[in-house]
Image (cartoon, rainbow, N blue to C red; front, side, top):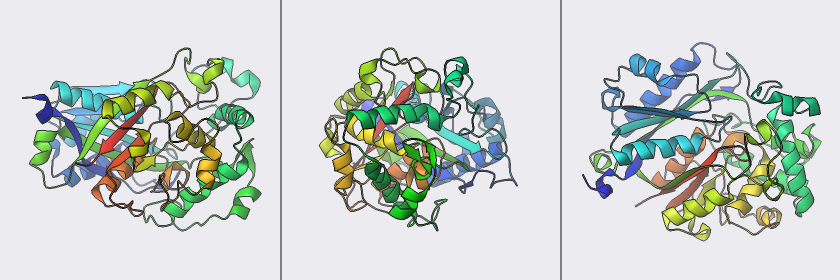
Length: 390
């Protein structure tokens, strides 16, 4: 089988309901993850009999061999998980699925993530990240908001970015979520006055600069282009995928703050961005919409610069111009993102990228043909993908 026939594509997406953390109590985290996988397979026109691979990330508690047994998958030919905390590995899990399909190690791989933070630990809670706590806890860095706030503060010192620009990201995401019936914040509007009246979480981050904590699960199905042509649903091409880390990052701000000074106020994506666009044969100006991992609004500003959508120090003016709004030049996080749709460690952002290229988004970008999706920002490893519509 030649390379073009094995070229990987996303053929199905599925999700559970999204609720505030603690909102799902009638089923286990494992069960809602299995339900999301089955929904993704049904969307693709496939069944568990067709699956032969699973990929996830960040110490996912929904183990692939157990999922194989629960779903009745006949044979497991591929199972992989990306190192690292948070959502840095979300797009990297797609990259691993791509590698499996492209190389022939598997034919149908499911990338999934399920979180029921009301049933287990909350990722945003102080003390949840203990890997290298001895390097952060003595300085009062107990939770991700505190750990990454230092990077945002440094970025805002080095550039003209202000709280007004962080506010614009929060307001844009919420406006998109208000048009999304699946979003946790679908019925909760947000005004500029409410944003600035909200409490500090870790300066310069206010309440609405921080992602939601939710219960929910999401999954995407990846197979070959040849198999995709036999299915009824429109497939979405994976034009490029990349993951990794720059030199000296170690575990990044979740474990220590000893990243190189030149990269400290960055998303750890500058090398990945160059590699990603080169593989896709595209330039940033050819991307129609972006789904950027918005665990904290300030990292979105950094990502816009690191991925080349604007120059160094220009991201504030870029968002202030309205560019990231639904009708702007680069619509961003059109489902509401993790600030306002749900926090499923970024797999929901991949799903929204697929929806955009299928023409099915609740905030549809006219004739969208390309979409950049990023994994968790400012962590190590991190990742990104570019999706395309033929």
